[in-house]
Length: 312
Image 1 (spheres, rainbow, N blue to C red):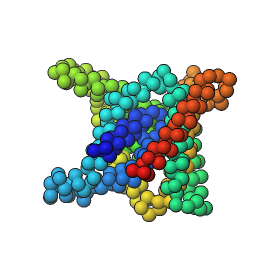
Image 2 (tube, helix red, strand yellow):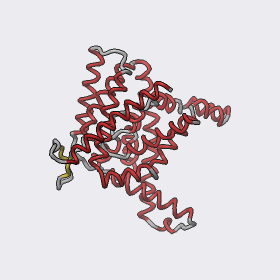
Image 3 (cartoon, rainbow, N blue to C red):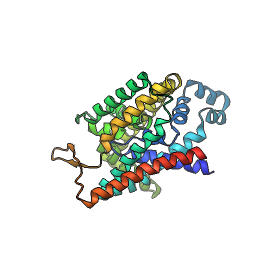
Image 4 (tube, helix red, strand yellow):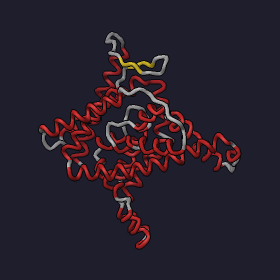
């Protein structure tokens, strides 16, 4: 039972951070040691498993895809959108510097965990780290670009956004920001779903006559379908890579996470045109020292979590 609670909490953490531009839910999965199980379980949702569903029933299908594991993790992910992520939104609104300091420290601490997953540092793994680092930095320095909101684009946005749940270091929310769809999907559409569910439980169906609400729900539908398709597609690719080229794949992931650190750098300011500028902290300020404390707490938390996981 304790393992299931911890698994649910890991799902909560994945869902919460995946909503934040610059932070990857895949990084949380990687740090907490469920990454390979997650990839391999999702990979099993394929033609073979659906054949089992139709021929032998739901119980065998559920067992084949490691359904209990997926159900607990994604229950946490879904629950986070209406609980932890809402709290996190409030914390970021009031204490953005400290929250991002904590995230920054946790990602730095994750390198301690990831280091031991690299079987050995060779020329090949070093090249993999550099490739991942360059890719992460390239994405983090990209400028915003606008796209239309057609059903196809929203579907593709879902495939892209879910990459943050699968690829450590790659923030799906940040990519949505670049595409200009973050507010529409992660704020407006999610809020529309929340209000719709609340109204249904109150037996209020007035939303059916609200074209704006129906439009947002349609957006969320195509986004969800795209996310599921992207989840299955990416998990198959990554599962094969981890099976056949584990050291190189882990090395690229390490580099990608390093490249993503720019996205969670605590000291930043938003300019009039919406661009984010990073700056070095002023060490004469008390808040700078407090942020450094939160960075240290983040590092310590991940290191202690890893040691605790090894002991148990």
